[in-house]
Image (cartoon, rainbow, N blue to C red):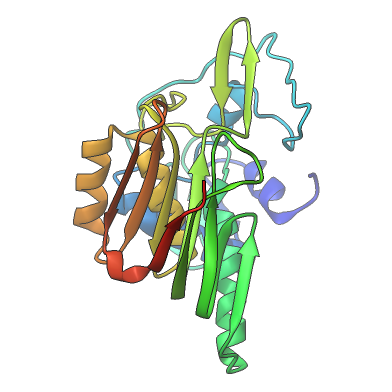
Length: 261
């Protein structure tokens, strides 16, 4: 979408101070904090890489990007390409495009929850396409990655968030190669770690989104070690390509777990 603060930021020049709209500034700094915690396995500076694999427009059921002339921009991530000079001002140090991805969706839900808390709301469920937060106790479900519209698991959460990331929906093919929207931020490569879908419970949706993405990118044992080190309280539900599952983390974050299928 043209003519919005993010598009303006992406087209701003290098080596000059750039002013950030308030919401965009808050989203950026929250995203960077989480990016640093997971060693930039995910980060918001990856827009050009996303375009290079064909993700150039809003996704739809008949998504079929034109890959002709698109060159892969796989490259090692070595430093943040911006300099912070104030809370609302940055300098871009090299050419790149922001793409906030799941960070943005998580931020929206977390902001909505903050507004509800300010109104002293005691019972609510805010759901943004499966990334959600429950004020009070609510039953939630995780959709089966291979059976659209069917819950795989159901359980209750209370005053916690749930986020799911997967390689089963936003996917496309070109010249016999399969692509999807989850990319390793450190290498620029489309993630291929044997995990089809990952869900996480955490205190905020941005945290849950980050954890679920890490499980979709890194080898399972490496992902588990990283999130265990960096996040104090979470639970996870992993569905592997071979249809096996792994459940772990703090089991007190959910209750009345049932297998729906």
